[in-house]
Length: 531
Ligand SMILES: *Cc1c(COP(=O)(O)O)cnc(C)c1O
Image 1 (cartoon, helix red, strand yellow):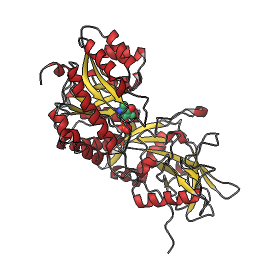
Image 2 (cartoon, rainbow, N blue to C red; image 1 turned 90 degrees about the vertical axis):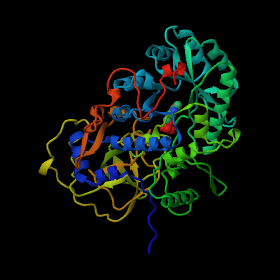
Image 3 (cartoon, helix red, strand yellow; image 1 turned 45 degrees about the vertical axis):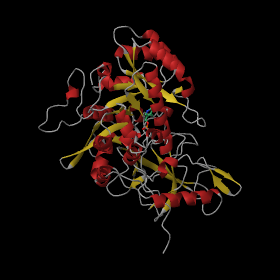
Image 4 (cartoon, rainbow, N blue to C red; image 1 turned 30 degrees about the horizontal axis):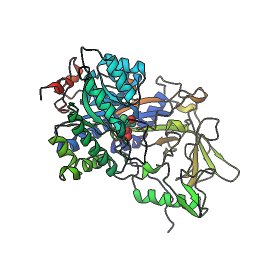
């Protein structure tokens, strides 16, 4: 018996797995649209949303989900969110335009992040909800707001933990100034409530923040304000790994290798954020998110059910209800988890002087991961059979091509066979454009023309850091759906959610104020009186 090879098996959604297993579907997509491509799966997104809602429905009577647009530029995801009747969280004029273009009206748009003067003016004009980042913003809103309609405002708060500073939000210590501004501007600002966003997997941190915000609600009442919203932000985790034990095993071997024990597993001097010191490996690696095994829905359910000491042990959900607070959430990555993959192609395989095997792809690192992170799930190589090295199908080719046909010849098989450890490298003329800085074990050596699938790239991987270095265009983004037994791909921008047979179109498709029975949201007008 030989030990299994080090591996980082990726969790794959059954729909995505079915797509990858139907080789014709993948290859047809690449023949039609070229390589590389980003694929988004709106049906998986819709399923994630349904699960999120199911958790909330069990515990919370009034809530609002604001999909955090910044996680992916995909219009298909934004359309799916709009169609499903949730709200959206945008963080730039362009994201605002995207939301409006996808059918969101002002009552379903919330704007977070730092905003400059011009953007603030635009937001006030539009009547969207402004999640205020700092006192300058709040002051400018008070000055710019007219007397006709009140500007709906949330106040983002930070500084719950003195040890970890945040550049966002109004520090708890400055809240007196915020209260003064808000109560002096009551005729022009509709103060909805408090917000925070922390990207932590540690439940206690979020509970502490909620507790602090509840205390602020009481203080707000003392200032004559009537907050009705508690916005707990996003940060609900993804599960990348299909096998936590193998993941741990790989990481253990990697740490050993960093100490010089066993075969080398990393490119150059890479330590992935670990500190190697005194014969030991310390610290938290840049890839720690891949170790998570708790699904976002479990994290959310546990948070809602967490008892609050200061409130006689009543749960977060109960205390929100007791205080007539509508719970707002801003999930990003949790909604796109497993709803996207990136497909690239092997250009050539190269051997270095020391025998290291480098698989060169037609993609760069920034198209599958933010530069400072490391992708810790194995790419899937769709090798051999049927797939030809069709060098003429580049990413500039966007129109359907006729099948490549018999003109392409298959190169003679490389002599090497059996498992091989490789690094994946990118297409840029930069030493650092390695797609993996850790070794990936493949069942066999890839061939030019083989397709390589990067799993679960929907959240922040595809386009948060993507650049057009060397004038390479960014990859085409396609929406892939499964319908009537087969897969269809269309350009992301052309995707339309299906209207269920026998049901009238969703009310949000019509003009006028949106009121979703599922969302059960309180519109801003309601905050002034009616229940
Ligand atoms: C990025 C961001 C989110 C989304 O975070 P996820 O971790 O993707 O859920 C939500 N709210 C704010 C303010 C953000 O900046």
